[in-house]
Length: 435
Image (cartoon, rainbow, N blue to C red; front, side, top):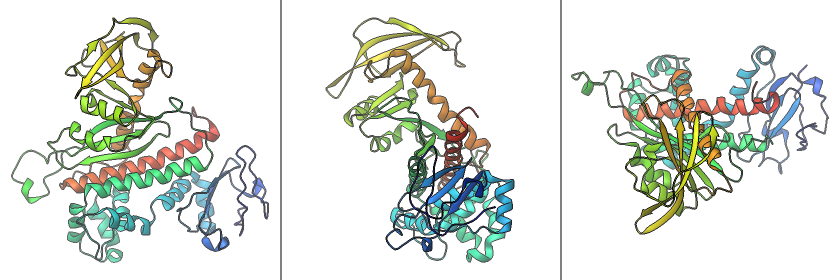
């Protein structure tokens, strides 16, 4: 039996949660269920903090963040059947209602777009359309348009024109905004997420190139080659498992390193940045240092350094032996002592390399050489992310020849991935990480 209570007191205890005032019993609720309270159910003083209650395995989770939308999901018999038969689907749908609110999406566009404008076609409508394609509900924007043409109210040409004009900054802001809302949900719910390295906020960055598109555009029809793939750098919040930022670039000829100045603008004190050798540049390393951040980055052969002492054996880790030495880096008159950690591999990499070298400025008291090598191996998480985004979500839409439209679809796939990742965090807090 499901009942919607008109009033709740904001009382939450994580282990044995209770909600007073009408005091519903745990047996009144299904195992997994979400209710989004309407603003009418709270007093005037409470209207600034609407909240969402999630009940998983009889544990009450309270989402008490300001700015969460105040919508209501009525408990009709049809809805009850969805809860009983497909509870995970209901949870995802409820989270989408929280992070993808039409008015907030349109406000985000109006704040971020420099040249774009809104007449009849809203940004929130584009988000809805692209969500259908990214989640493979529809095969293309054209097929979505056929289904939504009456409600959209503009021509298909107008839809594609707006997608073509959609600035990368808007797509980036969409990922940032939705990720911050999901982080609020995770933190507010009281879930204890283990940190990879205590006191540090670990971020893993990696580049991604979207595949070439079909020759749908007139300018592409007289050439054999597909349109140049678009580039981007994604930043994975390693502790939460969600993509917290993305740096899209519509220039298919640009290199990942050209985006690093933008990444540096986001670096904060106590950030720990983990990256591959493509990000091993003097400008990036010393830029992180200037922001009081830390790094674990694989050494690039073109990076100059001077040894301070010889390599010393540190121990064995999965896959090889670990050695360490102190080295000196210098850039623009600034000198930096850091550690160079070498892992001599038991088996060569797919490129035939028998060892990898890692540079870090982390104090040995915070992370010894073995731990640094293990943290670097966490990079596989972002590679797994791209695999999920590519295989599970439709992030590379071959019919979208426009770079900006392709980048938007990729960013929408990241939003979908983040919803999935947030769900995993919540469920793992109940069932355990291994289940």
